[in-house]
Every structure is written in C-alpha cells, then in structure tokens.
Length: 163
Ligand SMILES: Nc1c(C(=O)O)ncn1[C@@H]1O[C@H](COP(=O)(O)O)[C@@H](O)[C@H]1O
Image 1 (cartoon, rainbow, N blue to C red):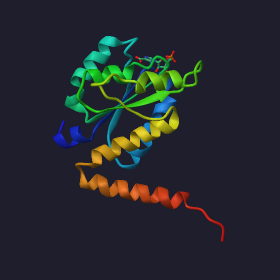
Image 2: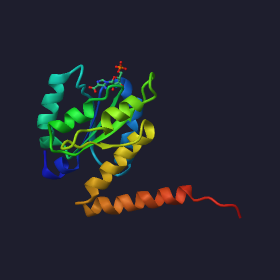
Image 3: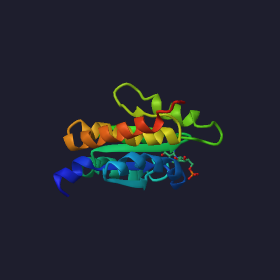
Image 4: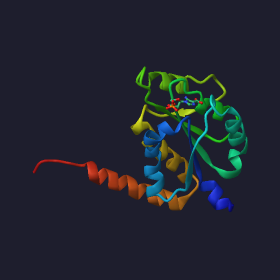
C-alpha cells in the first residue's frame, strides 16, 4: 500500500453488526470527500484476540480509527489503549439506557488514554466522519479545499429566510 493511501485510510470498527445502521453515518463525509475507509466488526468483549491483532497492526494500514459501540462500550477505549492512532468514539444508542451507558463508558477515560468522544447515535457517527476528515485535512491541502467546499454547501443548504 502506498504511503498516500495509508495516510488517508480510516478504520471504522464497531462492537456488533447491529451498530452498522448508526455507524454507517460516519461514511457520509468520508464518501463525499473521497476518503477511503474500511468498516468491520471488532468486539473487545466477544472477539478480544481480533481486537488485539487489529489495534497492534492498525498503524500499518490506517491513519485514524472511528470506534462505535453500545451499552458497556469498552471497544473505543480498549482500541485506544493499544495504538497511538487517534480514536474517535461513537456511543451507539442502547435499548435499556438510551445510550447514556454507551456515552459514559466511552467518554470517562482515565487520564493518559484518550478517546475523542462524539454525541450519542447517528449525529455522533456523522460527526465522527466529519472530524476524521478535518484531522486528515490538517496535512493535506487538497482535502482542505474539498472540506471547505463541503462546508460551504452545507451552509448554503441550511440558510433559510422569508422574503
Ligand atoms: N459494547 C460492545 C462491545 C465492546 O465494547 O467490545 N462489543 C459489543 N458491544 C455492543 O453490544 C451491543 C449489542 O450487540 P448485539 O446487537 O450484537 O447483541 C452493540 O451495541 C455492541 O456495540
């Protein structure tokens, strides 16, 4: 894999395939800006060995990790504990506690291991893709141009007023 591709690629991991309808929102901005990604189920609880293998090798293939999980959402923090790559956490809505459990499990990291936690649910997943794009754009002028155009299109689409 070329250095350019490696620099741009985002991993989207989630605890269960049932998270995908929420986590798919993370792909909206990535698709719009032609940022490559790979989405996969990796569970700290159910597939711990797969998580260790993924996290220990992530820097060879990816620039950033978006990690979503619901309930006892240990996946983002555990991934962050095993790689220096930035991990953006998405609390997936849970049935029993409406995602408050997911949010608190992800956001309340101990000092020294960081997860960039987003809002609960679809908006959080969407913004995870957006902040990933912004982070990648820091060192990429082409991406900055695309991102500014995307932002302007959003601004134009929400402006509304009566005559
Ligand atoms: N929180 C975690 C982890 C983990 O943190 O490793 N693995 C699965 N899960 C979560 O369990 C919920 C229910 O999963 P199922 O729908 O498969 O029963 C999902 O939201 C998933 O993210």
